[in-house]
Length: 94
Ligand SMILES: [Zn+2]
Image (cartoon, rainbow, N blue to C red; front, side, top):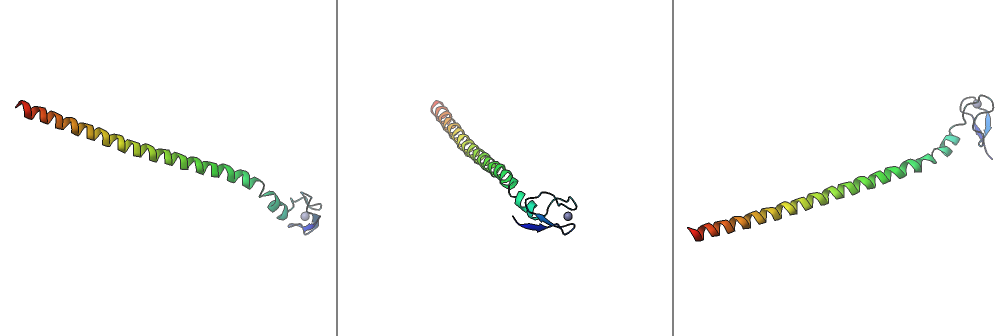
């Protein structure tokens, strides 16, 4: 058990005490620093998850874009082929 100095009144306060025994100020900054890392991983975890989600969404969008390109290319090829067929038929009948 260590003693920390109250930032407001300078009293020696146990680092286990949440408030200064003299002025009732929350014991700072040691306690704050001790308590701060606790919610930090909780905050950082959803952020990384969100990042992964957005990365996945971006990948999905990219895949959709590539598939769209391939599909439009195939449609274009089919149209060109049909066009050539029609041109051939027109050429043979004329
Ligand atoms: Zn104090």
